[in-house]
Length: 307
Image (cartoon, rainbow, N blue to C red):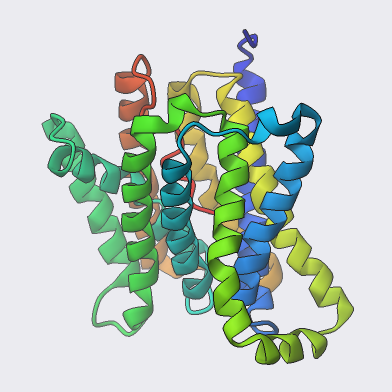
């Protein structure tokens, strides 16, 4: 059994937030040079390759799965989630998009009540309402700040909430490393036919991009994969209740990296909305973790992580 080291667990969660912030920023930056669908394929192909190398020393045992249908369904649902992220990041600033994506814990709370018929306290419903109020403050419908583009992070949060509900029932039956491989593998396989359908256009686009930009594509998959591994290691070092609030530091990292690359800072109302989302989401995630930590396959095992 791995020894509990809460400080190391928190440090790994902070590293995860930084990795995902860098990956998201690279997606937005490279979207001006390369087709988004190619970036999406590369992100999953790199993850599959990295995890294949990781599992290779175990031989075929490392790739064995008792629930292949679950792995493919899980991978397909996460692929849709990532698609919303990749396309949405081309239309919205990284920090605001990240904050809206952090609505996932409140979405999971709703799905737990409506789909799984689990009891939800008044406090949790209040946090759900508070999270959506924060989203409205960030988006400000009718203001023209983001317009229809705001639907991408909202759909992403909904898709990832469904992903978590699916994962909650079977995640404890599979190795997280094996599952991580199949997540990348299934995503790459599902996107490949779409790439091949317009192969000529994508080849031309890639050939027109400087080699330095193509190297950055590797960073998207590398940082996303490293971020997920940091999360897996973190949950082996500290209780979920300790770690969950720190997942929201990803918003701070997204703000910092986005400012360095794009010189963008949210306006006053966006700061308020992001703070409301972070507070409601962090408390909701903490309540879920403290309430469900004795249950196998808890729906909050990583319910804010969508990359």
